[in-house]
Length: 404
Ligand code: GUN
Ligand code: ZN
Image 1 (tube, helix red, strand yellow):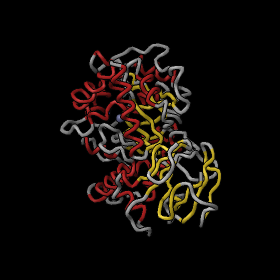
Image 2 (spheres, protein in one colour):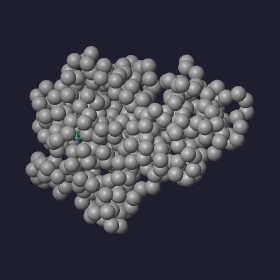
Image 3 (cartoon, rainbow, N blue to C red):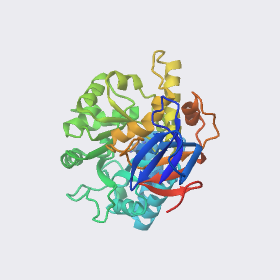
Image 4 (cartoon, rainbow, N blue to C red):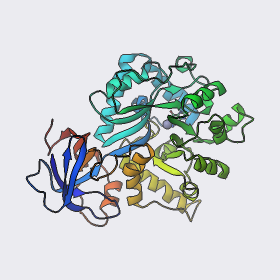
């Protein structure tokens, strides 16, 4: 397939007119100027971008997006847990997982790391939802054995995180202890053992009441981050969502372990959790990713999450931290594609280059192509900027490209 368009190779630079060729699941050729033949898709005024990656969200929480009024622990109890309980029915679970995948694709998210529920059938539901759509997904059955409704609590068993045999190739499992509040020491020990050489995802220090509760539940630990570290849960494949309330030592420990901090700016505002300290992350050179955290975040579109990251940094700078770094639109945009892809180990995604995965978006925004292009894309994002979605070399839908 030959696709014409301006190539968003580097968000810092104006995208040049060009073209790329897709063979199989990959980009096989790229060039500037006129395409070498009649294009099968795209046009001179189309932008070609790598698909977005979401480094943290919850598949079962789409139905409760936008349920405002509570802070984290009450919101979990009154809104989230009842919604997750509905996944006890495998038919509902599969239907919701399919809807989640469709919703992500609509917003151009072509890869993600997702929490499911604690049910034994949750991974099977996700597997089936991903059968027809090769969305790159790291997903985990949620481990929780206390501080929640009985219907969601499960003690871990040796096969807790096993994938069904029929799982699609683009689905990998993450060991997913919900957070230290809902996991006993035994559960965290189990997670640390099975997660030693695997993806691990959890929540860390999102809200002050949560941090205080962890202090009470693990009175011997010097801090929240050390609770996870003591069980071997912090390593290069660990994704730590939120990290709003960390002490200096905790940032240093996360940096030392090379774990990834997943900033969820919209969720932190929605649940009144606090202002993420991007400067600490930068000073400690911590690996950073960006997550929608659906259902605490309300937008699935990663450009809107990137915009929220900028908004939060500006608010911090204009109030409590006059020297705070405010990410540029190019930095924020890059995080939604290449940055998140690297954090999730999708090494051939999030980029436009020969050999990279053909996980691509064709965009036709009603915007001038000048130095503010990325800035306007990000600050005015609408999903209908997307006119084509190619995943693993396959058209998902397109008004201007062929369907297959
Ligand atoms: N901490 C533990 N569970 C959750 C969850 O589902 N959402 C958010 N935002 N934080 C959590
Ligand atoms: Zn979350």
